Length: 523
RNA sequence: GGCCCCUUAGUCUAGUGGUCAGGACGCAUGGUUCUCAGCCAUGAAUCAGGGGUUCGACUCCCCUAGGGGCUACCA
Image (cartoon, rainbow, N blue to C red; front, top):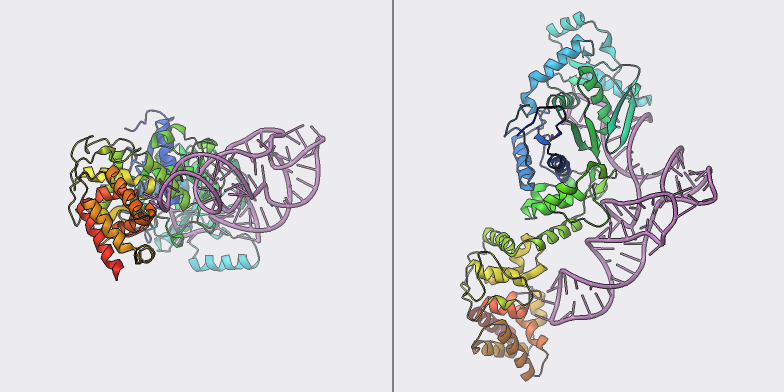
């Protein structure tokens, strides 16, 4: 699986810290790494950055993995699958950080610092007041190794700091930003190892990326400013500096950094809402990347095909839920009938709509031509001309087919077609008021019920004919019959083709609901 | 405070030293129809502002403004 034969293998990584759920920003970063790996035949590594012991949790860790699996972003090396460069959890890599830290100390590139948090705090306040750059003043820089060792032996709290060269600058190449450089004078002696013995982010990330042979560091823009520090560490340790790719941030609706208060930013939320993972992947890909000026709907495969780091945008993007829904709807449209039915079936089942409150045996000659103009229903459903079982998948096939593009979010399926399965479907009171509570309605519904009851053949054609004929007889518009019927049968003013609804609801249920509504309307 | 990054319609974006500045979501209007969705057609809406460079700038340079990030013993 892993190829460590040469130094040219492309190796990328997603390195979340388990301090919260997987949000859209993190997911987008993971996705770009994954896409790049899959496109180039490289290796995608998952590494958990849990050096912040206080905030890291097991739940977050599991949640992140769950989110990635839901999105279909599989990793080649990681905490659960292993690999040649493990462990893949920072908390288990302590010895590695200390090995490299020791080298830096020996070479005089890092030094112990015994300044108390209190002193550092005062220093910061003072610098702020004097409007000076806020940076460590290097008090412990001059301590000899012996002096430092003594203090350590005496049990003094200490951290390890990087000895920033006073002259020179750090340079690096970023595929999105171009060449970057920062003068060393802008940087200070930042901390490498915290007093609890754990490495800081900047140190750990370099040691890990270097030792894991990461070739391209693809991450959020918020890390750009830290990159010069990291470059210093790479150089000091004699490691090869990887290529960097800093992705523009994804912003919340108020254009600030994404956080909990922005609501629906968790990948979990989208999976709970039953968005399609492929749609999510598609939309996420578009946040900071585009292929050209025409295509924006991509299958997973097409994305891998087209993806290029060179086309990554520099601009921060806002997550737009409307567009996300649109992309989701487009992906849903493209599913095969069998796939749609499968998805809808699971939703209805999970929400308790299947099995339903009642049984419907569709009558002959109900056939699959029931729905003129829709694509033929394939898969394990009913074949043309075959008898359709009332409660089986066959009826659901027809229902889903009749529903057509009305279903955009799977989560809404019960709302759209629940009345096919339950008697206590939602009723729109306003619709009842407008369409049912009128004196002429009861007679119309009763007469329609009579007509339908007397039909020899209960298929769409006959039903429509019946309704229209009755309307003619009563000298009213067909709509005068259709609208109250829709409310009577579905509880609302919105539904698929009413004749198809009638057929799929079945003669018995249709008549029952029409009569019941007529009864209500009489009052 | 210091440093860094970003700036094309409400949003995501394409774009070249000379284009009617293109597409998509959303929005509006009309058509199809039993409602809604869909589909089709049409429309409103953009180069943040100011200076340069240039025969000519959305495009190159500078400044300003706005937004974001880093400046932590967070990542």
